[in-house]
Image 1 (cartoon, rainbow, N blue to C red):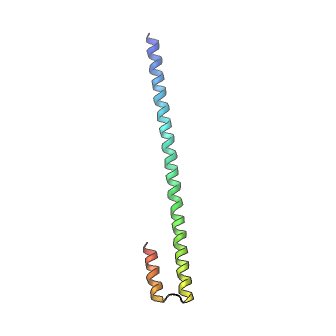
Image 2 (image 1 turned 180 degrees about the vertical axis):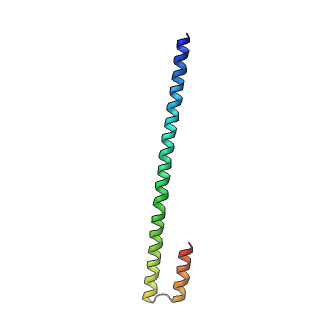
Amino acid sequence: MINIIYVIIALILAFVVFIALRAINIGIKAKNKNYIDKVGTPSKKNNDLTQKLENLSKLYKSGSITEEEYKLAKKKILEF
């Protein structure tokens, strides 16, 4: 009778350890995914910023916008 109780307690303990390890694994995967998303975002944002500044510069050089408009637009882009 006592042996059955020990076996049940051992099974419960094994189950709890299994659940804990599974939760840890899910947490690590979520953290890695979050890190990858975070790291990927700035480079995309910087690339977008660079593209906007290049387009603005082309407009200014082509004479489509004045120097005042160029400076104002550049300031808005860099503040964003």
